[in-house]
Length: 360
Image 1: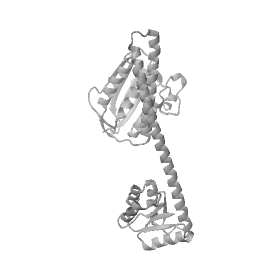
Image 2: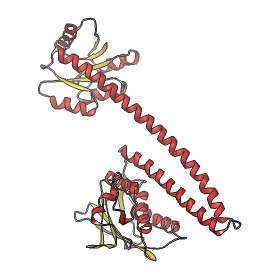
Image 3: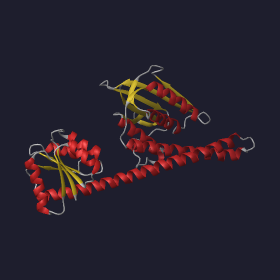
Image 4: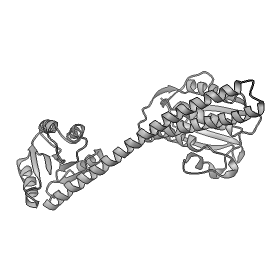
């Protein structure tokens, strides 16, 4: 087993080498260097089974030492050495991605060998998990791409049939139902894909004019239901811009809330009133979406945001992954979302979805 060993203290370096020789002289081949620069040079031309490194070296200190090694040899397990009075640095190193840490003065030959074996196995496990995740992500992206292509083809032909005057009305009704189902499948696939992206935790925030995003979403939702439902959407912020911290998924948040307000509504006209105020501490924009829909029972107000949960059957709500995605994105922004009764105490009079978004 070949080890790259970074240590500039001659006494500490000699002690580690003697401990490894004591356990099994023929098992370990140790390549000892005193600087990070020397280690990086060796890693260009040599392969090692593991790296053991002091964090305090002449040309690098603390976690910078670990990061430099990780950037050069991300596939290798790294064990860091810390001083008697600096165990916190070892913990921080493990949090940064090191496989283990050992405290100088408390190292024994058996402990050292166990740490090496453990670190190699742990790194192997991490690499296996990473490879499986990458493989799953590849097939997911491939599946999403191919199914979306098929859906686009289906929608194209179904819409042509609906415009064809030679197709009898009873058959058009069946075609219309098929079109709606394909559109639902497409929306579900999109939401699953977005949800997996959000789960990666790579949400980069920027300053966004909420009013501009909202107006575009409102027009889009009105167009979606133009043939089946009359929709009235009013706001108290008119054309006045106000800015939140978010990203391109803000469109998904607003669109999901508006669609649900229309979709789960048995009134002749779906009415949605949107109001904006500042939170009490002044750090958030509070945006309320009040609708005259079927409402949500108290017992279901939290369940609708959970992808593994199901709302009560008599609420008729199949909000599922759409609101799960919304909640994850909002929390990724550092905000909150919840639902209340539009008329306190009477859920049947409609819902009030409350959105807290960080003020830009």
